[in-house]
Amino acid sequence: MRATATIAGLATDITVSVDDPALLDLAVEHIRAVSARLDATVNRDCENAEIEAVDLAGGQPVLVSSLLDQLIIEALYFADLTDDASGVTHGRESGSPIPPWHRVQLGRGTVTVPSDVRLELMPTARAFLTDHACRLLTDTLGCGVTVQAGPVTTSPGGAVARVTSADLRATAAPAAATTFDCVSVVADTADLAFTAAMFAHRHPDIASEWLREHVRGARLDGPRHATTTVGAWPTSDHVSAA
Image 1 (cartoon, rainbow, N blue to C red):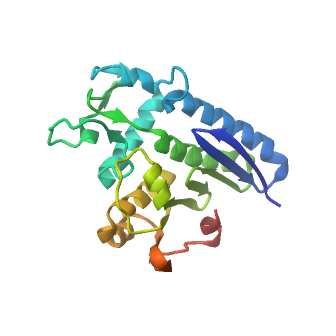
Image 2: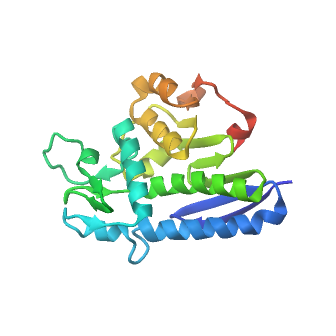
């Protein structure tokens, strides 16, 4: 019998489920600690969040923690893969032909973000939480674990992201007219699942082909119940139900 608990963190609800109810409190304690650390790193609603030092640097190098460095690396990687479909980098137009995610510089424990670029790392932090917490808890607790934060859910079988047209309008990324009511993606990691779903919304004409090359499976729900599946969907009952 599964046991489930929900806490607040990273400006959303975070839900953890475990197959052994006796281990739920340990799982919740770990999730709470990790989400608090991530909030203190990238959540601008938290006083003195580390990301604020990057915001105030005015394009100058800033020393960053290993956690923030890792989050930025992951965010920029998926921004490059998807033409920044999830809006990791945004700000006023600079006139530069170089994409803003290529203009952020990392190295030797520092990050340099151009003064006209702002990093939005909350979706990356949520994906990081679900992936790393699920993996660690599964290994240490020795039972099945599922972690959900926002539209992303991770279980031992993989990650699922379900992004609706309403979710798309609520993101910090520029508005886009999607032809899908909902895009659901199964991938090896939460970050890939989420950014792939966002990419599909923003590029509906090539969504099926792109998803077939990059993820394990996807379901594209259009208006009036029109549905297209890509790849192996559902890839497994456990992952699809996550």
